[in-house]
Image (cartoon, rainbow, N blue to C red; front, side):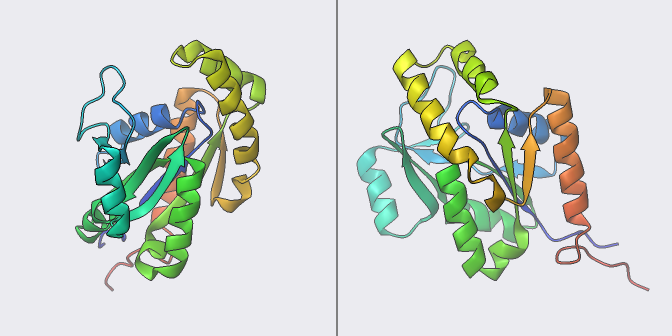
Amino acid sequence: MADAAPMLVLISAPSGGGKTTLCRQLLSARPDLTRAITCTTRAPRPGERDGVDYHFLDPADFARRVEAGSFLEHATVYGHRYGTLKSEVLGRLREGRHVLLNVDVQGAASIRACAEADPELGRALVSVFLVPPSMAILEQRLRNRGTDAPDVIETRLSVARQEVAQWKSFDYLLVSDSIQQDLRRMLAILEAEQMRSIRAAAPEW
């Protein structure tokens, strides 16, 4: 049986919703997934490496790439610019590799719009919205993370309320449980998606 067509797996969540942890687990469980590295103008956090965690760009370089139409999506979030290069995604898909995107809700909307206009992206895209079971749990996670000041946390919570309202725009809603349960459900989504008729490869009879 031939391999199924490659998938563009998009995971989005409110800030602090656990998408980075889920993506890390998913990459370990599915070696056939490759992560698309996002560009950003924010400074690296402790332990982050350029070209591994993000492509860290200065604002002028980022702006030049926007003007050149190099991004599949780009957005400003909490004063910093983020974007996913078209070459990063399409190059890997055309090599037959599954691509994993970890993006904010704004970026997810831009990618869905591109997928509606581009059959290649539309066939590949699988979008998943990950959300904690309650706003109280999200607030607890943000505070436990210890990376943001109290006023920043309040801003993130306010934005999260707006973002959660967009869950119906995604293919799947994954209400977060334990790390193990989230991974199990995500793996089940990918198994099912590979068998969809739009990307499955039938055996030769």
